[in-house]
Amino acid sequence: MSDDQRGTIIRQGNVMRINNAFVENVSCNNGSGGNILISYSERDGNNSVSIQKLQLNINRNTTVLSPLGQSLCLCCIRKGMWVNVIFSSRMTMSIPPQANAFLVAIQRNPQPPRPPFPPQPPRPPQASSTTTGRIVLIDFDNNFFITEAPKHPHNQIRFNVTNTTVFRNRFGIPMSFSSLQPGQMVKVTHADFMTASIPPQTTAFNVQLL
Image (cartoon, rainbow, N blue to C red):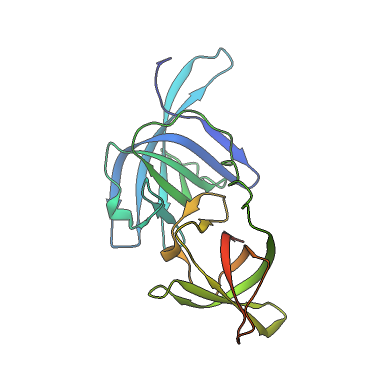
């Protein structure tokens, strides 16, 4: 078992994380609900390894990502896949225990161990500023979204999306532009200049969900 590639549970505040969990079974009730049964490694005080199982419940609030960071549905997960998962620290006492999943990121192959949070992207070479706001409109066809200031709804900014714009969910995991939804709070690192249009426009470098 010492060469087993399954990861162990890492606690991160109120959530838990496993890198390199193995998918033992998938139950897909519909396009947005169901569960997956995963296995992972657990080390005891003698440093011996045992394989444990955990059922992760999937709902509409669960993000499922492909190896390229594209948003997927639960039914795209298959038995035998390797996944990185983030889930609630509240687990049932059942056998196997159950918990609600926040993120399931499919991996092409087992990944080498890495820190709890991926490294942040390098600072853009352009001069930049940071704005926090709530998304009120998204135009996927024309690659832009509009935010408003939480306490000043008339203070809106249009952020133009390019091929180099980086999107990350609230756990710091890469996600796709198509995963954004109106109503989400985001912190946007963007160019420090804006057009004189209404609303003003600028280019988004990094978009972080809050």
